[in-house]
Image (cartoon, one colour):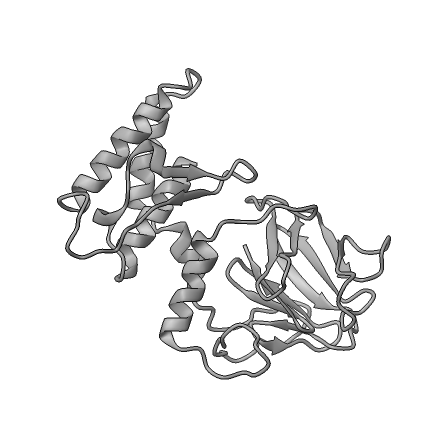
Length: 257
């Protein structure tokens, strides 16, 4: 949780259109999702109002708040928390790594040629018009800071797993991919991720596999296609996927988290 707080702060510091000085650091203004321990901060981007004199003051106030909160948990050591804080300040933001645009789709070593670089489009809306800078900014912020919905398919991504979260469905669909092989489709009882309310999804639409902490997606001969960052995969073609990638199964779009 501490690392996540500093990842968000680091991202705000680096993104160029929000300011750390406008982030609330009161303990009752830092929110944690009890479902998956995601952290949410409040930022009021008003240029004429600054809650902290400068970025350094913001980090110092945040540090004191975190250390004060640690006192409620006797099992936590200040030295360990300070190590996490110092490491978070020095390392590249994990959130920045997650949302870096992918220039290409990597494939496995099964003889498939590496594909040329691709340009990401805006989320599926019936056409493939280019995404503007404002649309991209809003989409990335939405995926980073939006409140997650809970449900039967809710799960937690971890260093050993990823999560697929739908972006264009009326009710959010979530699949936690945390096993070596994960099938997605509408064949109840035969797939791990069931999509039962979309006719264009095939019975066994695609398969996601995990190998050495890497994840690959493979189309299983679906009728309406599997797409990675808006590029359609050939039948049985397998490509590596990473957090931040856009996966589209027929009409349904997911973001990898």
